[in-house]
Length: 257
Length: 257
Image (cartoon, rainbow over all chains, first blue to last red; front, side, top):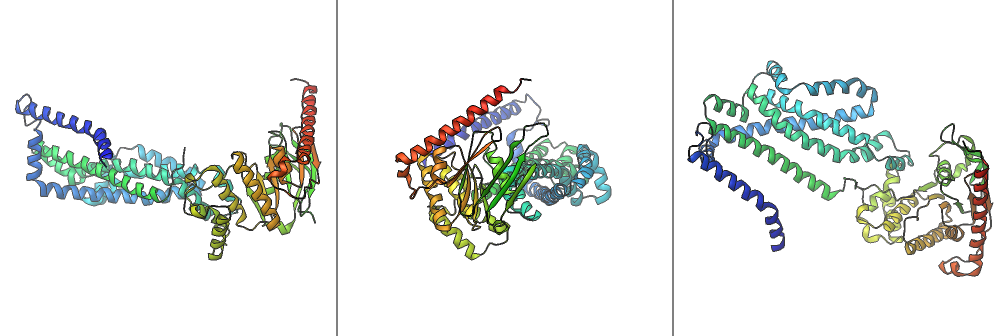
């Protein structure tokens, strides 16, 4: 117990010490008025604002979190399904995948106004924005996973003349699981970006909180919004790690390399 | 009626490569256990894959007794277990894929695993087992379909000597108890003499030598220490040597390009 605590401290302490140092220097710079506080508010001031505005900030964070989960969840369902379709129907892959890649290169900020025209102001547009940016990594990773099934295992299955669906569900999808998880991790970060960009344009959530604070020159509130959006992204990564950890503890899907 | 009848067999993997087996013919009687012996690259594994139907012959025919058609199993050179399936699930895989999985089959799988000394490992995953244990699971998987004949591709090559001897005896026991027939690829002359009734010596030129009647009244590991056994091994070693010599000569006689 003490040994594990010692390891934990040795592992994490440097980062905490560095953070404390950084915040102290920041606080010092602002208190000494080397930089004007309307450009760079001090950490304590940001904390004050966050506590004071907590109900608004919390509501905004919740709304953004909802959009992220919507977008990511939809990406997972549609991404994996379309990867399965592309994998089973090669002609569909050759016909459609190039356009998915092309679509992927169009920046979300350029599409967002279109989304507003189609879905109106508010959450549906934000959900769509989070969905669009997070779809492709899941789709592409799942497709790779399905295609990279161990040829030796495939040969083993072939001995027993399995049906196409048996091959997909008992071999190819389980082999693709590590790839799908990598796709979700990449998409999670992107979904946060997509949601906040969507909110800049369609309103609602942390995006419009940050945008409104900017127009009112409330730099401290901008910082609160930025801080909360990174808290969101971090919790998402943490939750995904927790869930996949539980999954892998039950079944070792990852192949030893 | 012979179990397997091979006639004028030839196999080449590309049009300009030298064909394997140059017209190999042999029949395997319904009570025989055969070992395929020969240097690397002579086509032992390919012959086994041809017998299993994993490859198609370039020329010649392979006729397998129709009664054996669904009664053939294959054990690869490596255990080839599915990493995300437990021991028990790995053993049951062939039945799942052929839709013959039922409670009775499950009991049989548990019994099989007990018989090979893995009763306390039913719920373990392959990565938690030693190489020898994994090979035993692979053997149980081959046996679960209640085959009449099993094709083995150097299955014990990677095992330590003690485990290897143990597996050889297990094989002889299965042969006696279940009247199991096998075709066994190996590099080891003494292994071949110990476990088979008949040896097919192959060489790189495609020539084959058929050695019958390895009749030892009783087979156990102490047999390997008897002069009679060693005399046989020595005889085949020299045969093996002769074949390699003639092969080298024929290679030397070929004009260099």
